[in-house]
Image (cartoon, rainbow, N blue to C red; front, side, top):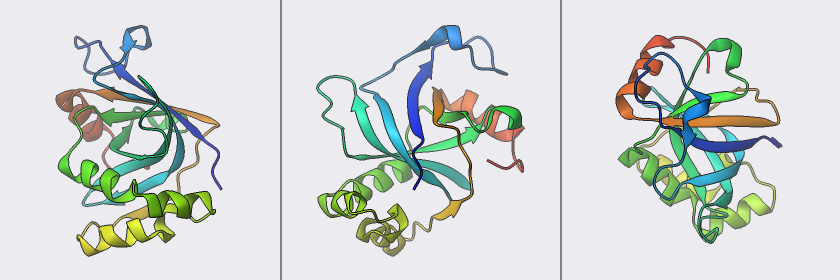
Length: 164
């Protein structure tokens, strides 16, 4: 079982398109702060990081829910500890999160099942959201930097064809 923790942030630097500026990390919206990485899954030519929230801003009201976000790598040499995510969640990401955040799925995860063995994951397949686990090796911690959609697309286009 993977013990990697995802730490989420938002890049407030809007001036530079080619890199993320760690001096400009902040937060946007009611953002999840940390989560246990459940895996990276691909479907519909996208890669999704799935994590179970362990800490969120406010009163930790999102703890236990599943966070789904489209991700790409910043660079191959940093891919084991830095991911870039689209800061604007798609309808697909929101559907994945909703379907996987139910009580049954959380109980199945607590019992030691992999996310793809849960009833919630089966319900995604019935909605024609076919996700396939990718073999991604992370360090103990992975930084997930949310960037605005146009900046995300430029990272995604620059890394197309490279292994996430």
